[in-house]
Image (cartoon, rainbow, N blue to C red; front, side):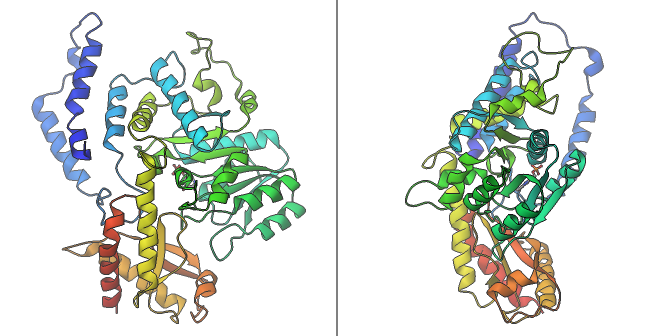
Length: 459
Ligand SMILES: *Cc1c(COP(=O)(O)O)cnc(C)c1O
């Protein structure tokens, strides 16, 4: 069934829900909940008028930020449970979705080679990372966290919330954490946990995890993998025809904790992150008693191993439904979708390398492509000006707009590849495209042609 036909099943979901409700003795809904027809009609009109002001995240011409609509099967799964509205804090609040959450979490853990784990879903990657950092602090109360300067900005902020010193490790010309710099830091400071980013949010770079693990272990430090963006690309890492750096993904099984965002590359609506710990014994840090909940079962309640209290059972249902239809496999389900995204990036990088208008910034490691215009001997200030102008012109085109984003990068990184580029400022703004929809594979040629035309037209 194609995605349009799947959404046509929404009335079927509603009918099944009504059938479930009808098992209980009927009652008349209270009149205080009624809303007049014309009020709803007017509100819907205003709502759609407001929602009109959105970028077309669903369309292949949108390659701006890490955004796309959820898969329709996730929408069906979400709605089916949302109509019941279970709370995955405790099995009292949602026995069915609580079990689904444990199942999907175990499936994700197995994708990284973990047969044993402790983990659960979270509101997003930030919440998932704060849990990992909180456990890091509980294990090493007097030691710091190290994260690369390309790591997600929330790590520094969450360390502040938790009161953990946070050291920034410089990255190299590929956007990856410098292991030399990390080693120096491990020698000079008391580092308890190193955060390795598996797919930086800026350019999708993979930190050199095998080397990071070696360095960290030598100094008794733990390793947390922030794979919020890049985690699901693990599906493409196996075999002789690996489409991503296999050594990095293979090393994930040796990490102490992992964060992955199903609401980024797992086809889910927002509100779905996931944190995993290799050692289930860290569950002891969460120990608390709740006078309100945890009554109906001796089975583990997810609230007993989660910092958040209320969490949507619907998020677990949506992910469960998605993985039933699109399993975590290389050759069917999510694998072919990610393959298309990865190939789109490789294709566009090839086109840019052969272009006389656009210049590649970094070799893409996942599905994010960075490039600039103005020539390889331009000044950084001119590159930046052109990036901003092209970004705005592409989006404002009245006939066939293209949506990309901009990214600030050290001019030194550009100069590593283009030594003639003039460093008249320390930072340069370049163009960035996130190709996270499978349709991008067939659309990159058009996207490239359009961006070349906008570059050519830029004064
Ligand atoms: C997106 C992202 C985060 C933050 O996750 P949210 O789901 O936006 O809270 C953290 N780390 C990385 C690497 C990310 O890409």
